[in-house]
Image (tube, rainbow, N blue to C red):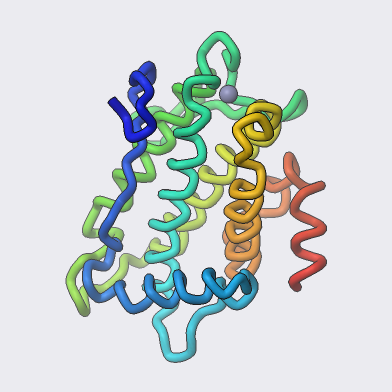
Length: 217
Ligand SMILES: [Zn+2]
């Protein structure tokens, strides 16, 4: 049984990652995020704190965003099935096909819940990989760290895209709109601050993104 008391129809469960990928060395940063977020100033909350390492900052925040998406999608899981969402889409114009570039090289069409399951499993495997997200103090981040972060953000964005386009009525019904909107705003501002997602990728939610960006940047 999941934390929401729902039967697990999908393999995806609500599985927050408690520790930061950087172990205890990431804790002060995590506290900083929580404190600035608590103050309600999202623009301030995304900025790299003075004197902090950029890669550390990206790592700690990536875990937080993963947890948020996991939580939000977890509340919609029972409404996002292979019959309601046979393909992973973001409105009528955008369809996503799954490929991880490792096991699945040629993109395959899968249902939205399958896609999200593969996607979240993939992100989790990156977060758990100490060669990418080092746990030990002083252990270096890999050369391609920024690239991995960009791919994680690009993929997490697709879950937001699908939730907004296919499940917004349910989100309203569940009264989750305000929470979703705050999480998404935070995600967009962070993405924008560190240029993590290409403009073309953001197109499915452009109407939501532009007002956020214009207001804060
Ligand atoms: Zn769906």
